[in-house]
Length: 197
Image (tube, rainbow, N blue to C red):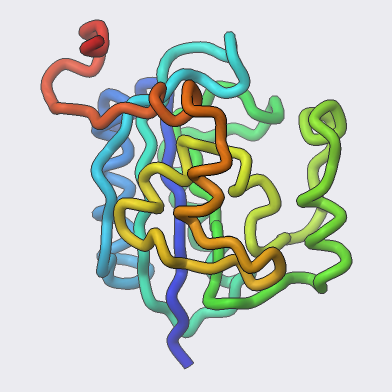
């Protein structure tokens, strides 16, 4: 059975595709042609590195596909696409040529509600230090990240978290306004030029 799949794309380093924005565009095309048709896509947004001071601005976008693949099969395909862009997993939340995150697959909760809730409720210092050894769905950090929720709200503000009952729009409204304001649509042109104020 096909399920709606939400995927976050991000990059803040040049790659064989070019600038971070070009990497996101090319990645979106590769997913469309080799995984499943992209049926909705956000704009590309320019966002400050996360966490603060991590490095250059990121290009971020969210896409939606429909797929009958299992979440683990999807994740394996997405990791192969990352590797094709030179992605190396050396540092948690580090700079990257391409980052693809599986945000949600239908209303699946993996591996179980208690584990997902535990990872979602981790304290900030533990989030930076610990990484799960298996896929957690929905992504346990999605409610904290304006760079995910702003583009997601553009294409599906009504998506509802299966455990918290909060919509994307509600999660976005709960974030600090300064975090939301820092996520700006990329207007095209030279990525290396300073972003517009």
